Each structure stands twice: as C-alpha cells, then as structure tokens.
Length: 113
Image (tube, rainbow, N blue to C red; front, side, top):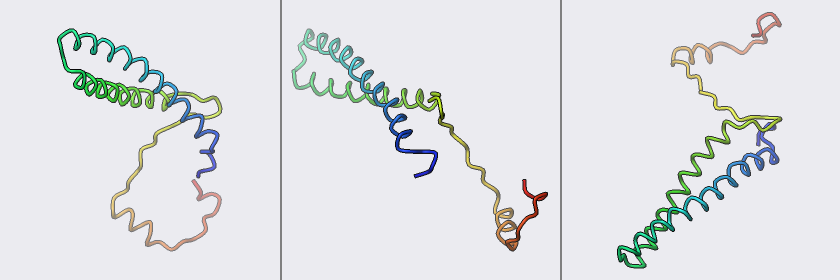
C-alpha cells in the first residue's frame, strides 16, 4: 500500500462513502417501495410480483446512491488530505524509444527539473 494511503485514511474514505449510501438506500427505497406497493396492491397485482419489483427498486436506489455518494466523497476535503484524479500522460512511440535508448547517466543539479 502506498505510504500516503494508510489503513486509517482508507477507512475514513470508506466510511464517508458507505454510511451515506446505506442511509440513502434505506430511506429512499423505503419511501419508493411503500408507494409502489400501495399502488400495486390497490391495482390488484400479485404479491410475488410486488416483491420482485420492490427488490429491483431497492437495487436501483442502492446503485444510484452508491454512485452519487462516491462522487461526493471524491470531492470531499478530509482535513489532512483530499482525493484527486490525475490523467495519465502518454507520449508517442518515438518519444518513448528516445527516452529508453539513451544510456542512464547521472544528472547534475542544474539539469534536474
């Protein structure tokens, strides 16, 4: 594991994401499934079909909440650190060969960037 990504920091990231996801999934799916079950029962749907659709609603709310709060946590300032996303920089094949064909040599201080 990277020295910047300690177990304590990883736990803080996970907890910031998971508790929000669990609470939102519970509350959101409770409301949506209750409304759906009431309307479906009123319309005379079978109990097994209501249960199956309720499970799909629960899963959909959980996926939505998980993605939403992952974005929230990626933007969050944790005090002593924050998460960043960096794009990889790719060089073309010719530049790659030039870099690897040169012999390794120590650089002087004024050459170091």
